[in-house]
Length: 335
Image 1 (cartoon, rainbow, N blue to C red):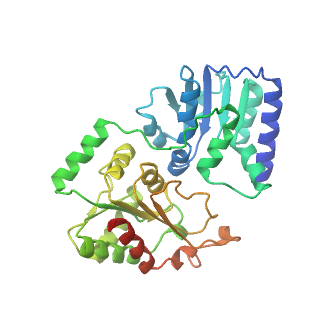
Image 2: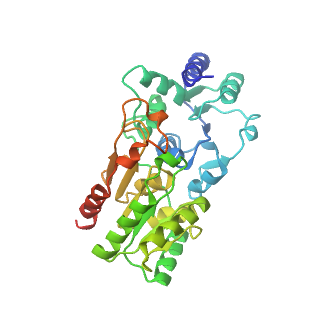
Image 3: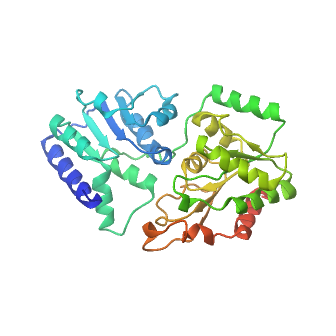
């Protein structure tokens, strides 16, 4: 099924369910479906914060991928489940589908909640009225019918003393006060800026600002980081893959002088924590996945069309020059 057909069916389902609803907006149980990657979940956090502000007594249940559950450790009003089958026997007053599939459509039609709001309807509307919007804007638009005067736009991740203590202990052990975070990886190789260019940036930061660089990422990034650091040949820098979980990494970002990296989950976490970020974008639509804050510098040679046809051989990310990124580094670190 094509994306547009799924969006249309989702729109029809919501229209049908909402016509049958009682329109009371008195919700005691809310189901949110967001089976997506890290960055997608982080850009959806304002949905949860606004729902809690509007319905503090309602229980929110989130269906998400297991690795995203940790983001809700300090939010006791949200229960996370990692398999949609765990909720199919339950009834909910409000269903918010931020990741529509045939399965979630059929479930909502069978259960007929008081109200169903879905991302597919918004994406369909935006495709016919000027194109896609920033992800945070789109997620907020999904719950627009519920919103009142005060809207929470922040998607800052809630961290606790445990995470901050872990970071403080690590930095103290390594003798680090001020530092720069870099993330070299990305799920799609066409979205990865070359590691030899990252090595030049790290060398520049070491020599010009005498700052260490901490290279982050998942298990798949460990070898990539080691290869890059071998090009730098400095003991100032550390490959910290495996040292921190996602919440601890968010706390690490809060204390960082700068984050530099490709479009990825670590970028969106850093931006959410208001860390100054230099974001390097490859294939993709302008604005949609850009960090939505005042502390980000975007480097993106976007194509109006055919961005999905880009490969490692012709990715626009290779158009980003080292000198451009060095200039952005100076803007942040010399302020």
